[in-house]
Length: 249
Image (cartoon, rainbow, N blue to C red):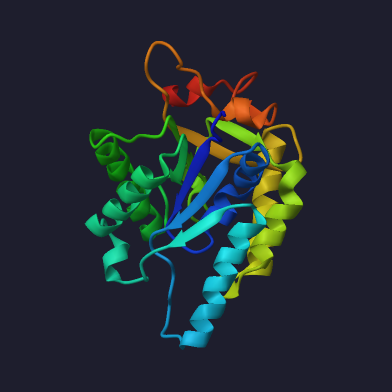
């Protein structure tokens, strides 16, 4: 029996995967993939009682479940998570060995949120160490966080048309109702961002991504992601805006 592809999404906070990669996650789940969200600096801005924490944790797992993803939450928001943290490297590497993902998604390392930057560096180091220790994803991609966080530094390599699953992405984001994760605000911002990327990709709603690691070798060296997405994958650039022009500025 042919095994289902496995996909790991690594985000710093409780809503990062749903916001940044919700469309891709839903599409890949519908394509038969096993999808897992990993949060390594889950936000806790104050001391909450056990009942409130239970409600917050349920929102986070429920939001992922709307997209068909399992969710692992590790780490509280402490000073340790603001910068590079070996514990988080170990957590991510352990998850790579456990899941053995074919594809991994991670934060883009140019970002105005210091915990996104830290999570990106930890992910890159975990990927390197996992390869040394015998596990590596076939291909790795970086996703875009919010407009005030990543977008100014993010020149996409490709877009994913998420129009067919956008209602599901909004439903996932609306599950959140907590400090710094307001569902209505997240859904509105995602719609604006996805429409902007959709305009650039000549569709209604899209997500933007960068390639961090290609498959390597001489035999099976084609990208798996476009095959799984079946026509919803679109390269960026081209026409009057060739990708390479930026290097002449």
